Length: 194
Ligand SMILES: Cc1cn([C@H]2C[C@H](O)[C@@H](COP(=O)(O)OP(=O)(O)O[C@H]3O[C@@H](C)C(=O)[C@@H](O)[C@H]3O)O2)c(=O)[nH]c1=O
Image (cartoon, rainbow, N blue to C red; front, side, top):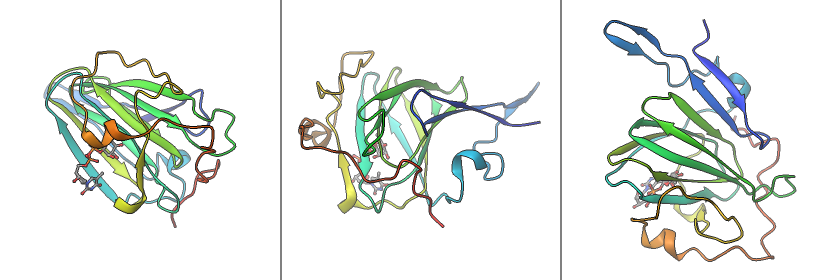
């Protein structure tokens, strides 16, 4: 039996993974990642880093973050505790959905993972207190390649579900997108690490 269903979104290359935990009277076992069963999404990429974040307060916003090529990465984002409004913004040069965004509710109960390919920015707002996110990354963290968009940028016009409480100084400092921004040369077919 497949432990996953893969659901495409309206943005090409951006997918939602629905996990199918195996439950019994004790609780459940959930496969969080599987190279073989997620082949259609992962391709030849490898998971190179795993991060875990804890966010204490509801309404906190983190993002929107990405790494510039050649350090662009796929991120698989899951929520293991609490609930978040999770969002990916298409920054791929030449994409028909350039600067479009897609959001999903990820929670400890809905067993979903947003699979965000190279060339997207990612962020989230916590909808509950005490949220824990798990990130699988296909590239290592490269502080020099790291960048961000302002989550309140009027060009993106993201409908954040709650008034924003906490946000890092770095996230607040990102300048709005200008007409000069043509996007990231991350490849519409997604770069795949060997
Ligand atoms: C992402 C990252 C950060 N750090 C450091 C930098 C900093 O000192 C501290 C906290 O980093 P940040 O403030 O960037 O944490 P945060 O705002 O939670 O960053 C995260 O935001 C979400 C939206 C994402 O998509 C993630 O990939 C990541 O960028 O951790 C690492 O050492 N390794 C890493 O992989």
